[in-house]
Length: 405
Image (cartoon, rainbow, N blue to C red; front, top):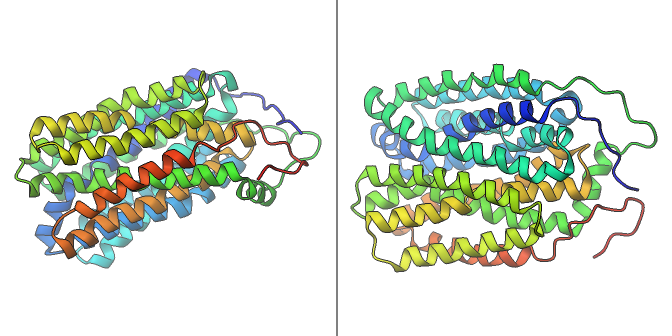
């Protein structure tokens, strides 16, 4: 049966402004966490693996909590989930600054911040977009919101670097904790009035989960998103230390992270706009293949500040450009009733990849003294993801009919 339409209750402009601002804060803050790796490990006397493991737990906690946060947002509205997420974000950042043991650091930086991000980022915000933006503009609207998150990366990395230099790494985290609370007033802009239950048969949560997991295209999307998480979190967290190990100044790493955020603004918007006119599976395959080519070129070229800036710009264009087409395909196949939950579920695969990327980066660095093996794993996974997205079927699922193998 076709997906039942849902009446929009918020204006598209309101949803985009508030949703984009929330994603700007939530994604912008987390994008600079790699800047804290060396100051924290040096002052606390920890290994890089200790820091990397906490970030890995953060990503896996984000992934595990994501479907539940999405389920709550679909049922009770994104507003409440966003407020709880903002409070957890602030507590996690304060705990990150106060932790003096690896266990406490993992609890705050890993568990608290991971759960906070599950309730303040794409899955929850995209659910509101899906319910309040017409399908003809949905991919574009998701691209605009993802571009805002990218702008947050560009904006926040220099700010966080300045805060660390001017106020010290610990006080910088306390300031960011206060900034995270700005999500609370912004959440009011995504407060959807409760709608009456639709007439006719309604799909249950369990049926929606079973349907998605049994559908091959959903599993292919999850496989590709695993690779996305592995690549971007490994690069985002470990590249500053990789460049410093190679003798480049910390300013080069800061500029590189900022360039990733800047060019990601254009990349995510472009991917969202193209999703209105092209097959989204082809967009995703092209993005993953281009990432592998960019990494090979970066490793083969002489390492200079300008080669780093060029790599950061190219990778930035490809950074979160997978997000709009992936979520748009989910809405296109399954409808918007459980979009936040299903978006959180496919993002769970992304976060498993994130866990592996950031943890393996620290683990293999400590055992081999370099990041070479992880770079080449990222290349191979990019080729796999390019192939995995080609079989994805983008047509709405026909409920009650046998599904294609």
